[in-house]
Length: 412
Image 1 (cartoon, rainbow, N blue to C red):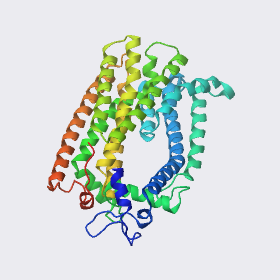
Image 2: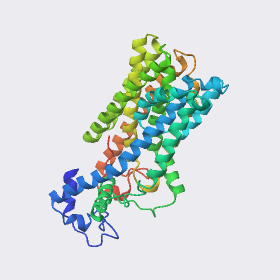
Image 3: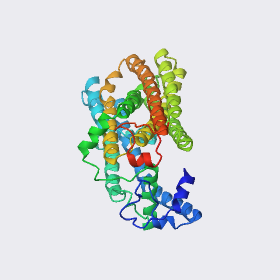
Image 4: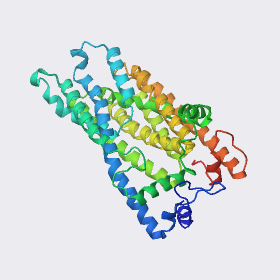
């Protein structure tokens, strides 16, 4: 792919501000970039990418960590007697937890990893100024999250044309790099948001990817109740909090490795079903025994496997439902909103400690279903690529004419 881009660097174009496309619909590199040598182009790409990473990634990672600290606070609060203090039943607790989780649906597993450890320290404030420990938990983490969110609002860019610190040439490269990856320019005049939603709903790929992600997120609801599930191993509160950290530290490592290797090899399918197969095995272990070592092994494997699969699923979605822009935006929003609903109803599965039989039986079925949807998606996209190779029309749900003209193929 890099070779193809570098070939394109030497293609000049006069009217770069109006279009990056010739009469046949092929993308043309902007003149400012076309005049660069291969070495200059490579240096520009590294510099622009590094600047974007330094501006955007720290903000997002911190926000994700705080997001998951907030979510873990509710799970941790259960072990700190929130139900007793507020006279809540199990159903009351699950309902308040579920709706907050549905809103705060995304986040970093570092937040999960350190949420329990953070709780150990803050809950030592129990009784200070007449405030219960679990209230201190919400106060400290809530103030921290809101304060940093306000600051980050002035730092994070609204588009790739307004990234803090990028020069005009670096901004031009960022836009060109995105266009060449997608096979066409984003065009805000392609239609309305409603039209984009209709296009997304009519696309079979939307429903196939929804099936994979929805099934995976059903299993993912276990992370919302992780301290509660781990407490079923029989340890005291602080040891339980401590035991919640290692699975999510392993999770971060596995996510980074799986995501990096998937991008490097430009392969999605095996990077999804491999982790999901481990998820299936871990749930079978969890439902089959009360042995402490075996169940903690399952707890170690679960987040690492289903989150490692999730990040590749999301990449597969954005790459396969990429154009037109209105369809991409609508499809991603539709899939995300629908697939996070297990955070609401899934919370009602975690009862009957310590086995949580219903929850883990459902998770076994969901893991198998996610693998099945991934297999069907792989077959469907493979057939679409075969049609594109033969020049056979793929219908309205396929790539745009501009993408086809630029040799677009689905990553499998």
